[in-house]
Image (cartoon, rainbow over all chains, first blue to last red; front, side, top):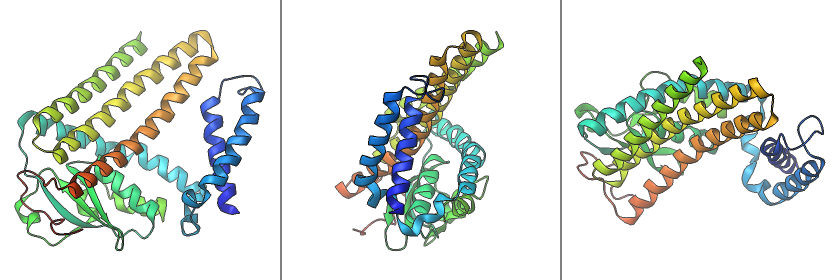
Length: 176
Length: 117
């Protein structure tokens, strides 16, 4: 039941965001859009509740974590991404690459945490998530430029993938 | 006036990185390194072109108080959030599919996925 309510509220809110500015009810919406939003929320809640809301990921509902998530996106994550782009610009122009795929221990326990970490890794310097070991939540990461001493190792810790900030700790605070 | 300069600067940065992404696709040797250039550069570039759109909409809204510009800015912000999530997830899906299809990374110095299902 909670899964249905959460999914319905979320899809209704997204629909209302997309249609904001269509009329003057509550300053933003046309009356028909509000009616349609209710139907959309009901339909999506019924169909998607099993995929969208898992009981063991209830921590994500906490609003404090949403604020943390936004802070992470505009702060550490954005700076890592800026660095990633300077790095890619350098590699595109010079063509200097030593690629390889390494196993990275993620240390995440939930699906949302693993997804956030994998996406953060993909958008930060020199790394691209290729595959996931679904039992241990370990990631297989493609590095564009591997140093000699890292290449010999069995696996890397997630903290070592990021240069400027401790992104895995942020992800753990937001999603677990 | 200052706003116009900011819009042009944001558009310039965005186009520069999007162009780099395209050049990267042409220059790199295999699907994984191409995805590097593609996902990072185009996400970053598109964030900046979207910032230009938001600035333009804010300026127009300031002058005209027309609600359609507020809607434009809101939709652009939603588009950026969705783009950042789907771009990374899509790259992940493509890389995984490519590996399972049998594409091995070119010039690779190490490959821990070798022999895994």
